[in-house]
Length: 138
Image 1 (cartoon, helix red, strand yellow):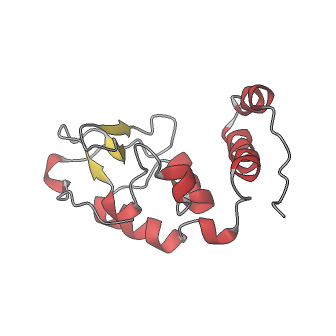
Image 2 (cartoon, rainbow, N blue to C red; image 1 turned 135 degrees about the vertical axis):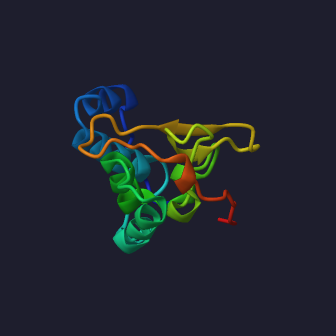
Image 3 (cartoon, one colour; image 1 turned 180 degrees about the vertical axis):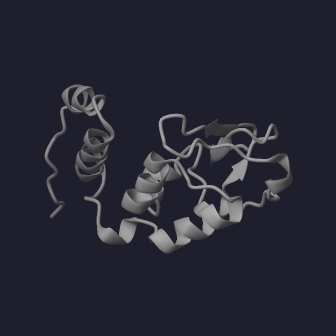
């Protein structure tokens, strides 16, 4: 017999999530549990993998990205259906060297990038620190 999931009022839950990052993570947890399966510790990427990416890039990742990896970075149903979230080892700077590319459009035509202007460590890269881009299977 199929497990019955509680129906999530998306409008109400999303509206509450717009206030602060912790509320966003609660929304993601509720959404995952109602749409597919509840989040589990195995869904996150270990902090050691995230730290290796930060060391390779020479900068701390934005806090929200670090937290997202830790909470659901391995959940393909949440991060890889369309425009997948790049694995920590796939993160790279954009051609200008100013933005961190963290998602890739599913046909490889575009990337999603951002800065961490609200973080203590604003995300800036020197052009000389740009790693080569390689896609790995997920």
